[in-house]
Length: 489
Image (cartoon, rainbow, N blue to C red; front, side, top):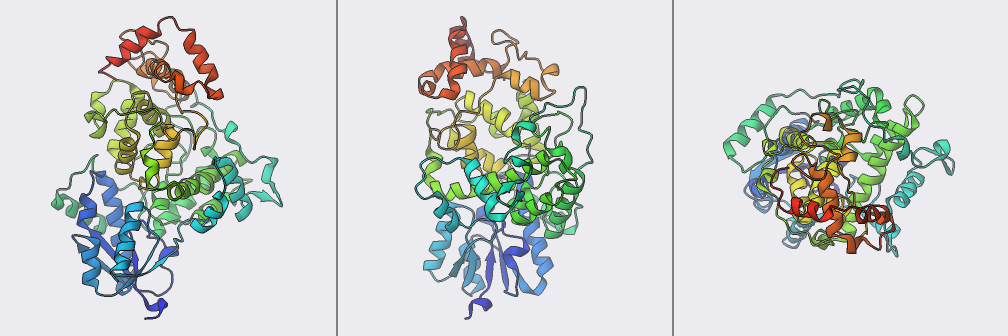
């Protein structure tokens, strides 16, 4: 059979036109075992199934959608060897190789879902002992000529991160920005919801209206709306948190990107075209997220291998508490933590500062097992896929890889949350207090964690100031004892 005639099997995160352009027949598989493998967020399963079914409807007779117990059973039923793109996890890669050995897969193609190929990244990474995202990001900008003026960055600076750290506007409950683009559900979504109800899966989170694109047309509409109406406001407050404005000025494009509906170069080119109309700091900050960090995380997932997730530099062994694993914000008093957990429960999505400086910060301070925490982010977030979270969680958030990904832990006390959010003014805890009934669990947890890990941190020059502050505390032993016995957060 000629390669051009060979059917193409697409996974549920390979739904965009760049994955299935041409005339090949397309096979899509809904594997019941895959849906039952872990307690995924209900809305995550809805998005994946809705995306696959919408694509099957769009392609018409060119597509075959099979529902089976396993992928292997579906391919055997299909009865023809297929081609498949490189999948998005180590487990899926092992499966594809096994199916290839058994003759069910005839060809494994490079993924078209990223700007840089895995082969090109391997060449870039060769010989490097330390991986700095800034080096990678600048090389990406040069390679793809994004926001470049000949050999120099547009505006004379590579990185405008320092301009994008403003706290929320005083007294504001929402940013003065046009709302995001929202999809409209259809009969396919209705059928998906009914099928998920009938399957009685072990899920987490609440069902709810579909908030994210599942078709290429929807994804491009959301992208165009963001760059025209919201990109300009994105940068300054991208690190801020407002309790009544969960979307802020964020793009909400991580879901269509991670479902493979948008190509990253199309996304950054769309943003680049707005440079001049939107502040360069906002455009560059968004480009850095997509062409820099997202690509970097994908490639390091493969470069580090499956053993990376087992890194545990601070020997954190605490199992996730029930209220955390089951997304129960009612069990929490701290306003920032309650709001973040409610966002995950209700939408399967909160923005990156809530992930890093609230949820991740809490997990670090409380010694949650990094691998278990990474799995929780993967299953509980609608944009969480196996390649997304290990580097983000184990490396960046939990600093469990010995500093391979980040130069210091992303650790903070309540003062940071107070400065960057509107939560603390209505919280029963006081971010200024580390002892007593009103002691902020983030403030007290910060000092208790530093005390417990001071030896490991002593050689890190970026932690010198924090450790110096720790040595000046005359009540640190009482703080540590208090936090060891804390049952309420």
